[in-house]
Image (cartoon, rainbow, N blue to C red; front, side, top):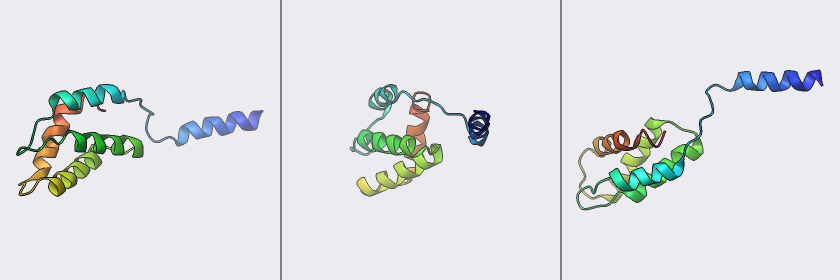
Length: 98
């Protein structure tokens, strides 16, 4: 019994960051309301995909921005500075999606 308690307490010490819950429903609603078209393209699907990928892999905002910038560049022809668009989208949704 003492060994089990010791192992449980050690496992909590090994967690490097606090475990946080995210309400993905609120995040999706925010994406649907705040994300605007870019050069005639609706990026909401890409934003949802990158948000889910970021959360499911336990990554941070930089991963989301890189994922979104790469997908924007792939899907929107002749886009200049996709990183700028990714940053603006992140700023618009970060309160509900973090």
